[in-house]
Length: 310
Image (cartoon, rainbow, N blue to C red; front, side, top):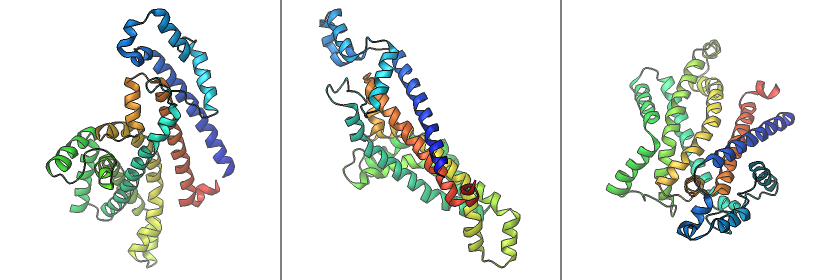
């Protein structure tokens, strides 16, 4: 198991390196000048020599490879650079301030989705072709089809505006988290419920399930002890995979609900050409996804001993 973890960490390091290259070249090719964005109208009153001196200070006139390796070298000390927009503020501090909001939002959304979707999918499989099964499948189809930004806006209009049940933005109390968590978890509930239903149907039709029933085991024990554990393997695979989509979805959700997390900071930094902050956030997202995939793989061994032995 130790060798496997080391191998996965090495693979994750390669992924992070490739993502950092893609992010760097994308920002280099993006139109616009971060120095002009930083100076605003004051850039018009400055000479080209003044602008060049400022670019030299920030290292923007250096060759691309020098800029990239300088940034990579600074990462060894967890130095993500300094924000161009918030002059003098380390990008690391900005990311650390915003990260707890994003992690809390994603953790609550994922746990909510798992707690709702797995029982619904399991019951839908047990009650196959019933009204309950059909209702769950209709809900899943709607949940997958509805865009997150539209669901978020409609939630604000009805539940925050018309009904006044919950706040529409901010993170002041637990009520502020209800709408963003619900909207972010909606698609995940739909996907995981459908997947759980399909996995349970496949397992319930296996010969060893018939054998377990023939031995006189109660149906509840047959479902929980034999069917559920085997049906969870493909579901756990997708849960780790969907963690990446949850993180990307926070850009939209945090912007709509004005949550001071990494998603909103990323959105603002892209439009302000704050390269150091954007690169730091992308790297942080990549590390979180790699870590989530490793944790998912480790869960395989806990659920299926055959995988752990291999």
